[in-house]
Image (cartoon, rainbow, N blue to C red; front, top):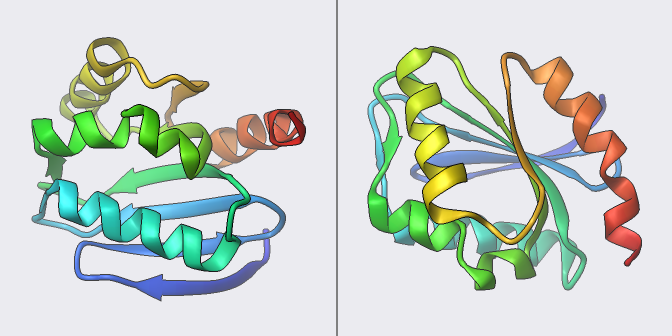
Length: 133
């Protein structure tokens, strides 16, 4: 996995990796807002133009998304930027929050949860074909 470059935002680091994979890591002790999600999408659009990304998301300790941020991150508009999401869950509490995102907000794209970055990356690499459609 080779890093092309990273964009540092207040809430997160957006790292552009080989190919079409983008890793967003939300910083410790942060309540992610819809504005934070929009800034992440803006960074992806600036780098990739109209090409969608395969997104791996991880979050720091004591970090969660507001319900409004989860709703925006899973909205039809968000699928203009993201083709598939791999969420790296670090503990049971985070898994519960990720389940709310997946089951309640139901993004209109493939999304799965993983225990570590390696399995998340492997799954995202399997999703590359959806970028061609």
